[in-house]
Image 1 (cartoon, helix red, strand yellow):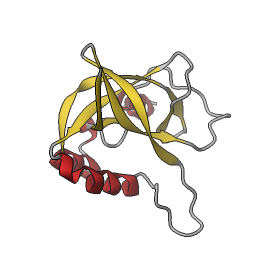
Image 2 (cartoon, rainbow, N blue to C red):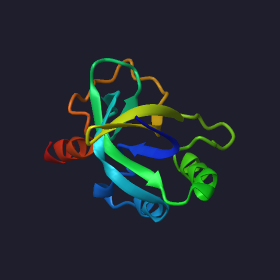
Image 3 (tube, rainbow, N blue to C red):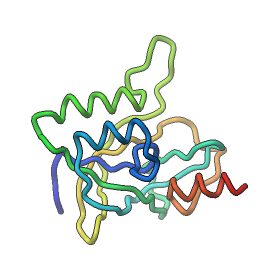
Length: 142
């Protein structure tokens, strides 16, 4: 197992396939390690998927990244925390928190940070494919 505070597992808007502004920022400071899975559950919120770390036997597909410069990790992860809404404005609700998770990438287990949804999913269906890109492809096809 590879243990470090300097890995980040992403499964949504930070994926390379989405080419978002947030991904462009991520790719400046993190290096791609590989594609893999975490033990987690993806829920269909209607317009977007969210992930919880509850153990339901499902897996979530994503990408693992390693920080390029460990001295910049605290600053960069703080920027990503802000992007994920961990520092809300007054009267805003927090929907995500950053947690450690074990990610299986090309046969190697890494301990990585991941952003977990902490809002209510009790009435939301599980998206069993566990893959954000497939989720959006399915939604666009309709």
